[in-house]
Image 1 (cartoon, rainbow, N blue to C red):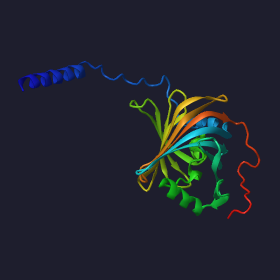
Image 2 (image 1 turned 135 degrees about the vertical axis):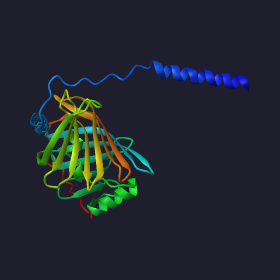
Image 3 (image 1 turned 180 degrees about the vertical axis):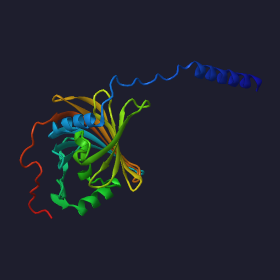
Image 4 (image 1 turned 90 degrees about the vertical axis):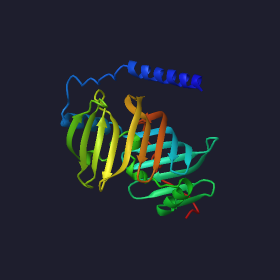
Length: 259
């Protein structure tokens, strides 16, 4: 018993000594010159206006309180209004096509050759994944953009010594929703966004792993977390193509005999 107590005391002493010798965290260096809110806004706007369409293979992970789902998909985004997701089988064959724009949501099931619309799509999502994502809210997010940037009224900016980034407070002038946008100090790229509604955090976006793609720095991991619903969607991009154009019929689904 005495031997065990002695070993325990030696272990605790070692831990305490190790803790005492850890170097203090290095302070984050402030930028040599702070940008104004207008300067940051102009750089963000210029970057977003330079991205017209995105196409990429993506690995999507949907996590809820009950289940996790991993999907292999092809993502196509045109502007800030049109999104197409082709879900692939293990052998790379399309098993479902989802198209979202500002007027409707369509889902084509290749196995049954059926086309579903709007509330039918929400019902299938809920039964399959246990949650519903209205992609119209996130089309800009998945193309590496701050949604509705042109409609935001930027209120203020501060530099955070904890993150080393700019933190911008804003309000959507049309929806009256407050937001906080975190921007990298060196690159002026968006790294995080939080949206509130009625005092509650609706969702958080994180743009990570920026890499060059077609001359643009593009986030290769994009995460959307919704704490109120207890879910998370992560998209990991593989060789995204920027501004390569989209076929004229990319967002049309004409399926004979569907309902």
